[in-house]
Image 1 (tube, helix red, strand yellow):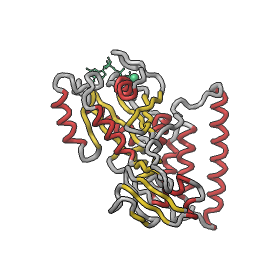
Image 2 (cartoon, helix red, strand yellow; image 1 turned 90 degrees about the vertical axis):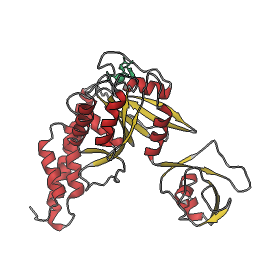
Image 3 (cartoon, helix red, strand yellow; image 1 turned 45 degrees about the vertical axis):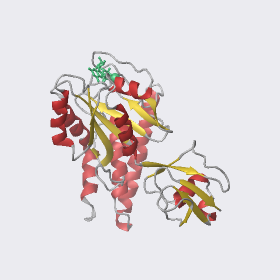
Image 4 (tube, protein in one colour; image 1 turned 60 degrees about the horizontal axis):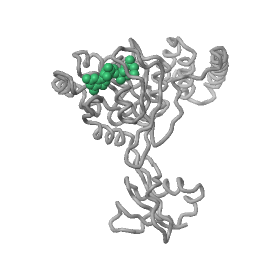
Length: 329
Ligand SMILES: Nc1nc2c(ncn2[C@@H]2O[C@H](COP(=O)(O)OP(=O)(O)OP(=O)(O)O)[C@@H](O)[C@H]2O)c(=O)[nH]1
Ligand SMILES: [Mg+2]
């Protein structure tokens, strides 16, 4: 064994040893492969890891075929400007909240374990469609498949029930359960990198059932513990309290901007936003409009965040939500 293996690699190796499912083993092996220093001295280990990975992937395929070819129910194809998953204990109001936010009737009941599998709905926010995923409740631990779904999502809503003193334990148990799967919910997530042992996702801690007795007092106490770590809001799905603010926060936490195209000499196309990551430049926008535009771009004019309307800007000009751009190629 070469001596220059990083602690992250050793952690991945340890996770591999502890893994109980094929999916977990694959995930750990992929990390090991990514973290392994690539040089002559590690060629044999590299080859060995690749061989084991191929074997496991084959096993995964066979298991899927055995399950009648059924796909992973936690794999939700993404639609719209972003994918937001819910996480919560049974009966906290996840399904009712998403029903109200989306206008789609989901199964809601006054007994626990109503929702059996993840179900996506679309929420309209201004001129955007955002995908929200209703999920089965978390019990005891976060299943690997559930964790995989959170990892693939852009954002999470951690939903707790303010009608019960249990809300504190709920928040703590959910965060712990996710950490056990190397997932951390934060305000400002770091970009995913193979060498990061933990994947971070933007999250909002949502206290639901604000209409209940003493719910406000409980939320204030929750804030004392979590406000530095997470965005937070108290709502009532039943009484429709706080929902506009929640929608705005969901949009904010996706960290996206809407930019509109204005063909030279024509009106801007305000009904068709281009959705870009916060921090996107004119050049990024040009790439979204047309594959060949970044190379052909001569200059651009911006309305909105520029100093004056129609100001000519450079290719690295930082765009803001709502900007209108005229590309000259
Ligand atoms: N008072 C009050 N009750 C609510 C609120 N939101 C949901 N409920 C009730 O809580 C119960 C559970 O709601 P669901 O939406 O089914 O909860 P869930 O989290 O999806 O439950 P599972 O699918 O079992 O995990 C239902 O009786 C809802 O009517 C709320 O804001 N206030
Ligand atoms: Mg439900």
